[in-house]
Length: 180
Image (cartoon, rainbow, N blue to C red):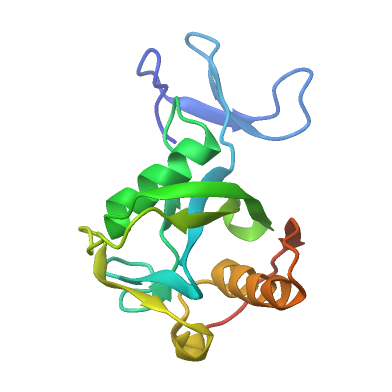
């Protein structure tokens, strides 16, 4: 950040009084500009034994597979965001069945929250951010082409829970991982 979003003056980076982290501070109007983690919300939507997956039409990870998910918008709840993202990316209407995974990714200042969901019908189609959308059974999950570690974590926990017949809330902190 170079300029204050309130008055347009240049900002400096320093630790404000009473704080412990460097912030962008405007010496002209006194505004302190906080930068906080981004929240990604999505859904692991199922129809019978199959999971709804999207192949990404955008970077990062263009062409790789994921669950419908994306950044939360202002003035929406995490469940509302998960439903919106599923509709935008997969054209799918869902009914949420509870939060399933909560993934902290400090190195990129993100939190990923995925809900379990049930597809309400089979009327779905790829949105602007998806090359294709399809239902896959466990044997068809493209493990070598999963876009994000948080999605792989979520899918593996889901399959384990489904075998046990009981779904829990799964949390983890992801450390850096390279993709080849």
